[in-house]
Length: 79
Image (cartoon, rainbow, N blue to C red; front, side):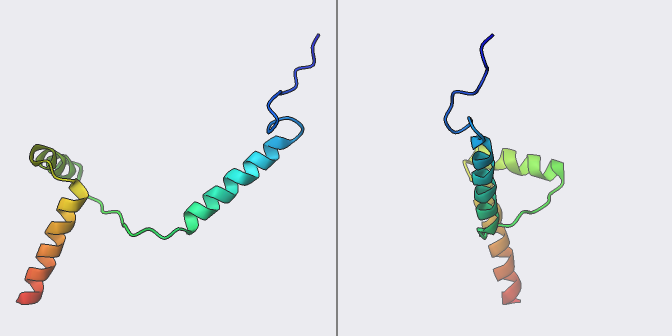
């Protein structure tokens, strides 16, 4: 019976540990990167209506919502 050892150089002879370590480093680096975006929670029916509206008019949902918020904030400052 043949000895069933992996033939891939990165996996054979404990190379799997190196792969796991590399993936963990990449994940840690990704977590350190600061995002310029934040999430918003919307009720499902509002999200669905917004998605349909934006698709119908060809808008990007995030850009459309950002523009609405900016407009509302600027209108609020004028009062």
